[in-house]
Length: 629
Image 1: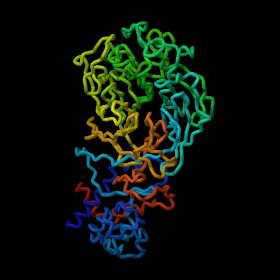
Image 2 (image 1 turned 120 degrees about the vertical axis):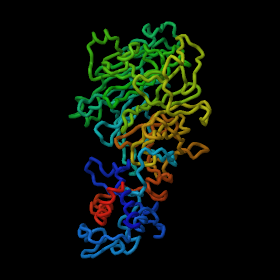
Image 3 (image 1 turned 120 degrees about the horizontal axis):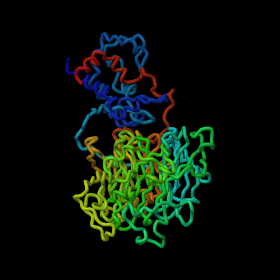
Image 4 (image 1 turned 135 degrees about the horizontal axis):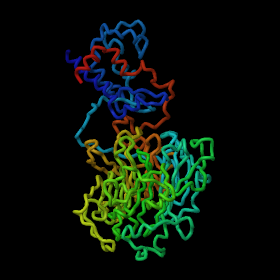
């Protein structure tokens, strides 16, 4: 094979291997919607740019320069190109230069940029097990789509563009999320919540509705769950066992509360609710029944802080309950390391198998749930059966990676020095209060005793940051996030996105090599799109958008990521909308977003697909490529 054939074969191999790239999932989606096919990236300029044709120096240009004079004589598929992609009927052609008169004409037929809903391929090689250091994204672009302040967001289990939002005082809403770039705002009727629990919820600085979770089969059974705090003096149904008890070697009468409340006056509750009877089917329900179906969990809290409260269903179908150490400076009663205490733990509960009242009493359960048979207590007899992981101070926002369910990530708020991100594993001990992050911790008081460092096998954080890195030193509290799995910002894809409550920083964690557990974190600049549906205000004296506090992150059914802040709801959008460069997006910083073209105007014909064109033109090269991979 001569040099021109070799070069052309190499280029064609890179085109065909594009289907190995993580973004090729866009080509092979399981749904039936019409979508444009990729084009060859001709430059970082869109086709309608004012740049001269000499600027078209991208991958399309490279394909033309390398393959324009390769013979396609006697191609058995050549006749099928008659009348397609600029080829006139009856043409007798032997090379590309006989089909298209110039590079400009060729790239007008097959070149383009990732705009108007299309994708382009830049010829980049697909590298497996790459050990190089990935380049962090240039910035995170946000659009503001809502003014409300919410603590939780859960995508509707029916797979639609709807999501549930809840606030700390105790209301849940069902909202419609607008399409990215369409200019729409979050459709949410504040006056008509999906469920109102404000009469039951005790709302204060660190109290309120802390989590919501919808059963994996919600569309069929209408079951969902709320995690909230209550005051047993204000609400008689707020009554449960105190977490400071004899099993945990703790005497509640000796507790010194951090306010005027009595020991275990405030409780953490998980309650089950239903939509059954409110609509013909759960997916059509716009309101829920206000009364509890059953109480899953009720526990008295020793102090007024550090009680987490997030709930979520894992990929295994079990309910995970994140609980802090209960408060008090430095976890004075050492609850997080106490295997007989549920504080400072992540619990894993089976809410599909409901035991009898007698079984609940005999087993010493905290409510209506069963214990999964593979919880770690089967291997550690000293461990409470509910416990999945321990040694946490106050896990604040956890998530499972949608592509790698074994990656269960949690942000854990620190005491005085360090905020951390952990990968949660079965029977894992994350060190608190023996350690704060990677450092040994010395408590000021220890009425509950101490745990020595050599007596535990502590799992250290995969990422984290010191408080002295905060803009306002000492003001730091982590807000855990998600692995970014959307295609909206391709430069963020596969990175773990998280932030700080005080909104002074957002980080992207990059694992390298993949599946190694080795992460590099980079602080990412962020700004608000100039065409944001709701205009963003700025921090005085800064270009940063005034997010206020970052309470939580959310994810919709498109895997787009949202920031739930005290100033509103923000969505991560295409980098170009904030003039951030992203080579994978291949959109110019000056191009404005526009709705995706209709199927009639897009390159939806398979005969116009550049991959097929090259296979048709060069069947012999495609055969040779089988032996050159």
